[in-house]
Length: 280
Image (tube, rainbow, N blue to C red):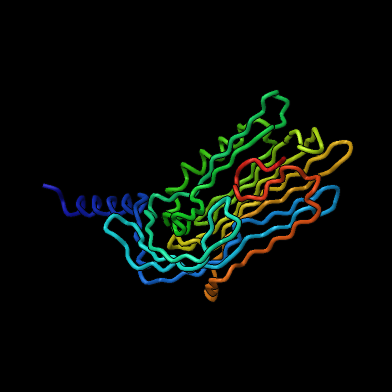
């Protein structure tokens, strides 16, 4: 027969192990309303210190959580401006959706191509997870609030990025709902109008979530700086989302577009494909 003292020790050890084991959290945020301001696409393209393109696509929306299912999915209503890649303008949208938030982990997939193996990448591809989707616009705003569950995917992503051709440096941080990285690499490409150019690309990412796993801020920026003997190009593209308690939802279009001296730029990218190849 197990003694009383042994039983107490076994129970105590069991409780300690339970507390140390990562487990699912279903924060009850049913009824909460979250207001967001989005900058889906912001781009500045400079040639020889002259701004050729200055363009931004932005708007506000609201996400209302009205239910949490037995399978741990948040059901929500999206109201406000929505946006799809390759579309010129946001549009007013109101729809219901759901997100299996416990499956949502913060990580990324970064790949480069260096055909001539000269430590200058000719192309790259970056995919962020989770990401904004016009067909499921609430999906990126709720992630698993047990932060240890993000460790494996995040660490693997960082290790893979460090081993990509052309990468000169990777710095990163992850702790209790805060995620960030910066990737630097050498690049080369043939410009449509200016022929061969080379230089650097710097990618910066920062995201923060509250204790319920709800997004507070999210930003991703690509800065390409390249040149040859005749020209210098600096191309900056960014995307960001921010939550604010007082943010309003305006169904009117909120788009800024300024094009200056487009002639001579060639096939300048003006669509939104955050995370793809940006030099032309």
